Image (cartoon, rainbow, N blue to C red):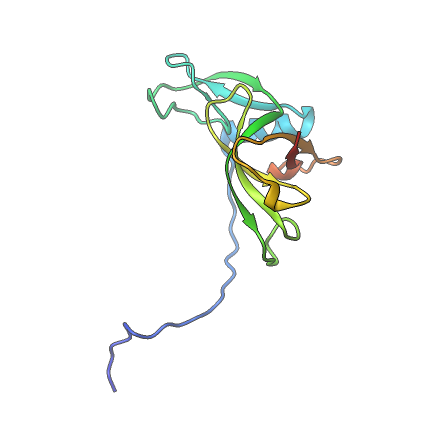
Length: 149
């Protein structure tokens, strides 16, 4: 019997419990969404770029950022993918989309759920608006989704 397993494929499924700490910036970002229904970013004092979600350091200038700014609840779809299947970890039943949304006042893309009646109507450049959860839980799904304006 050969020890070579390079041509064999083994399938399995494991669940691994984990704990993730959001950190100072993402914690403030999530708190503002949950408590105030505000979407906040951070602005680089050197180049003026606004990051949503917030980052501690500007990816362009490598400057530490600490100027918090409120950005709009509306934005423009920069890219998307439609989800057409369901698994137990999915946040909702398909079809829906994940999109890269550049919020008004931000310079970076924010990935979130886009809900539309007909996914075939999704377009790059489409304007969307945040829909907030009635009972916030302190996580990113306090923005339930984005819907076309």
